[in-house]
Image (cartoon, rainbow, N blue to C red):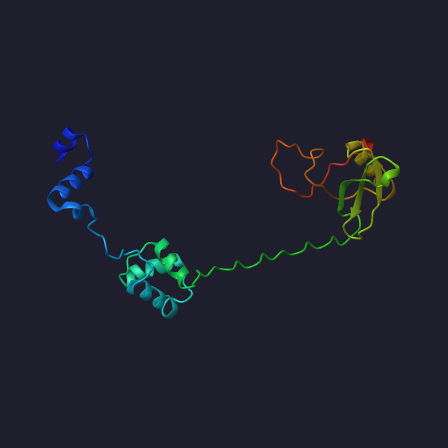
Length: 207
């Protein structure tokens, strides 16, 4: 057969069809499985059995596990995609597990004033249409929720934070800890650090 394909420059399938046509006529060109129902067909007793087992024996099992159980326990060898199509035609969808919601516990406030100051800048049109867009640089005490000081700046910068901290130190004392976001003013973008509080090494002369 391989020699015939080379001599006639035809594929193996074409040679076989040519031979079938010569011996059987036009009927030999029909596929041998013509008229037979495919084992993957959505109808038929196999599909009905799959649906019945799903509703009665394997209720609540997802499609992947169901496919494995059908093969191991019922000797029904079908692909997952075929099982899925059979169930969808019967109106049965694969159950999806619901993930438990993540429980987020709120952080407790500090017990005393000055133990933690949250500092940040808030750019906003504070003056409306009457003036420039400004950034409010300020701090809020974690224990009392009070603002010890805030200052308007043209933009968020270190000078604004130094001005704020100088006033707080002179009027309230040195805070124990500062809490800031990952602004590049405080954290280099080349370093991968989490957003965490930090305790500064204070020098009064630097303020």
